[in-house]
Length: 398
Image (cartoon, rainbow, N blue to C red; front, side, top):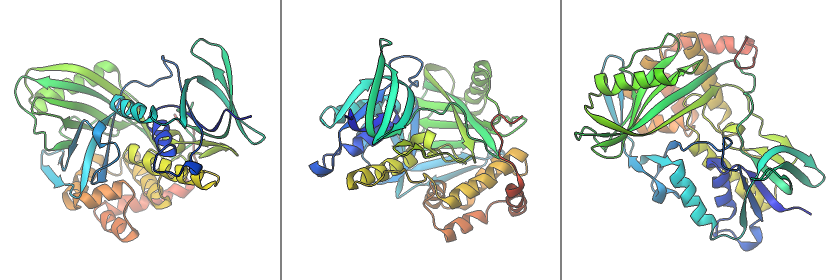
């Protein structure tokens, strides 16, 4: 006897999004399934609060939980030249994980098809007719759960072998300033007026939520993370010397590490066991954005479950997008392409709505070629030619 039709492991962006879609009241009652959402007990297995950003056209299902939205993005090149782009008809949205969790909990509390349970899952294995999960509850007692389908969003223990892997690592300060120094109508998407690291690229990122409030981040794309002291020193220099914010209070902080890799991610680990979210390849290798791909992925899974099909998650990004990302990552890693110049040029020369759709994999071949004309062609072609000869290696490579 199964404990549920569907078990979702992890109550982060992917897990909660899938639970919401599977239990949506718009679905016919016969198409709904008994869903068990397994969340890790409080402790190190639960991630800290974090911020997700994404863009979409018009109103979206999570708008009531958003912190802020914008339709103007600014990029400062390394020389200080600023480019401001209008995102219309798209809107850039900021969603805090704690707000999304509260939103999801409120909706799921009204939907009896979803049950929530605390369990530290240790093993997921295929069995006749489905899958079995082994783990412990909050008190340490052993627990066994069975289901027809399992969707596992837990972070991977290690990254798959890749030709290129960079880390997008960052630290952010939620600041409150004494003076009204922020323009709440424009996001500083990439500010390259920061010192360039020896390897990779670095930029500032500012999400203003009011004249006195913003999330200010220092971000690097490189092979290794920094110490907290190094991040804080970079943020002090950025807020004082570049942004000139004046007196400020740091009211909260956040940090993270996002792998940017051309590694192939397995979407299934058994006949009835599937990976979703970042563990299933939802992170866009060239940008680190994940949330929008999670929505596409979970939408397709829910449709398959309702239709009675095997719900293998679709690739989060097209083969063409992944191929272009592989070339860009290798070009950045080798230093053939200057990342600050590359991204600044794209935002200067490509209409912002088209560029955002390109970064989200929503453009066709003709538009991809049009965007590609603004990239340094020779370094990119040289990199594309060498990729097939490169071996995939574990990260960090020996």
